[in-house]
Image 1 (cartoon, rainbow over the protein chains, first blue to last red):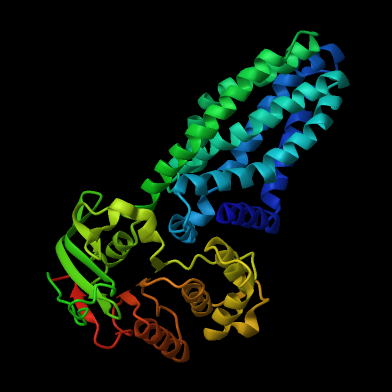
Image 2: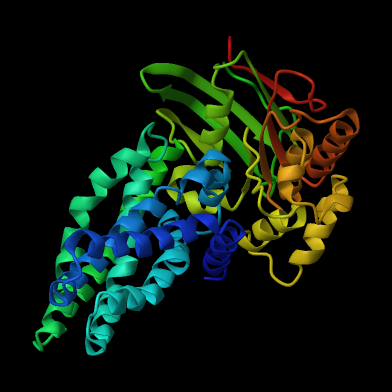
Length: 221
Length: 221
């Protein structure tokens, strides 16, 4: 556990040393979201209606943008060999790196999401549901993205292959995340969609580290 | 290809560790790189891997580290197959690959400190980092960002990692690449001291670093 936390701390420290990666994804999230009103026109009702979908889709794209680099640097400079030799199973290495990715990207997105929501004219009352959804779905996006990043490790055009691989897997996250907010907007209970999202998050927490470890082991051979 | 033990453990001395390979083979893609390779190293012994580029020196080292499964044959630690308990084997190995695993964004000391934490060093981490830096003549560079290091200095930093945690089996891939004469002497003295304490060393080298009374395993033959 000590080593697990040390690895999380190392990855967060490395990300903070090069804050441009996380900052770019965050800016992409905010600016990409801000583009939609320009295309859709300044119709308040329409904007509030599409806001949940836009915010979730932008969160997904921002996660995809940054997850590509997750194992790449460590793979290129030989650190991944050393990480695989630690007194820590490879699935735990994968989980630690994913957790660090979420802390440096998912968490800032979560904090920035209300800005976008308010800009789209979403009622403040629906914000808690949006944030709850992102709190459950964000780590899941990091986990799914990490599977894709591990599978495309060493591939020549990993940046292009990764979204094709990961997007279909992210559809349920998007559907239920947006559905929860829509339900809240319509004064319907959001809990069923959030529960589904939580279920997916738990399944991802169990399955993704194993899948990442398998893919990493192949990349290391 | 069979190389016999140079310093066999004295009969009846079961405490002395032995590391052996038996009928090893390795495939890289479609190509058979190594076939029917056997070796034995006893505590305090050294094994020198020689051979032209692509002969499989690095692959053999990765197999010895447990990073690459053998296509055929077995690796034995005290007559037990390492694959039955890879976690225990990882705890015996220090591996310095052809890449240095140095993070350019961290300081020289910061790089080592992060590895010390990942290797499970606790309160004594700072002391072991300082000792390892001083040993390889990096103490004056401790606060310098590692991106300013020369290739030889990066190599020294990678080698300094060996001193962070005591491991009986050192696997070194061209450890002397880029080192100047003084650093090479330091490396030789370090290997000697490690062997004097009963450690084992496996070195892949084109020459330039020949541990005294090392077994030679010529992979081209």
